[in-house]
Every structure is written in C-alpha cells, then in structure tokens.
Amino acid sequence: MSIHELATLPALLAARATPIAGHVAGAGQSHQSHRSLILTVGLVVGILIVIAAIPLLIKKVKPNRVYGLTFVLAQESNRTWYAANQFFGACLLAAGLITVAGTLIIWGGKLFRSSNKGLLVVEALIVVAPAAIAYIVAAARYRSR
Image (cartoon, rainbow, N blue to C red):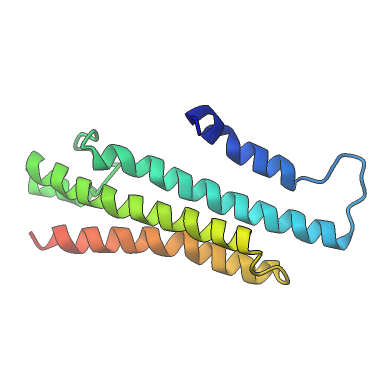
C-alpha cells in the first residue's frame, strides 16, 4: 500500500460510513453509520500516533518544549533527550499499532454491533489507554535518571 493510498484510507472509510444523499436512513443504517464513524476515528487516531512516533524513534526531533518528553530538557543533555525520546517513540509506536490492530479486530470481527455506546467506550479505551501507558512508562524510566 502506497503512502497516498494510506493517506486517503480514512476519507474512503468515512465516505463509506456516510449515508447516500437523498436516501432516508433507517434506524439500522444510522446505527451502522455511527459505528463506522467511531471505528474510522479510532483508526485515524491510531495511524496518527504511529506517524507521530516515527520521528521520535529515529531521533529526528531536536530538543523542544512541545513535542516529546519535554521534562527531559531540564537535564540539559542532548544524549538524554534523544535516548528518552527514542524510547518514548518506541512506546508510542507500539501504542499506535495496538490502537490500529484493536480497531481493525473490532471492525472485522463485527464486535459491539448491538451498542454504539459500548463501542464508543471500548474504542476510547483502545485509543487513550495505550498512548497514556506509553507516556507513563517512558516518563517513569527517564524521570528517575
């Protein structure tokens, strides 16, 4: 799959989730549309987490106060900055892949079909929990140094 195809994937999935113009959506179609939207957002967020992780992982992010483990700046060591953010990038990459995989499993396995509320809660956990755990693990490892 090319980068262009990967970039257009969320738009294609969202278009598929949108009811056809002029067509009155029944309750089942609306439910399915919301389900597809929730899963599309989860997939897009997972992909964005993976994309955000790559520059950190390959040590392309210079010390700054916005992107990465910014508290490492207080240690005033470029070596520490790059090591900490490389580890954080690896953790974020794993988190993003878990988010994408979890979303695809729910989508492909047709899980949580009866309740969009239940799906929304589970998908929010799949998106937030891995990224939060990635930050906590990386922060715990480098705050003590």
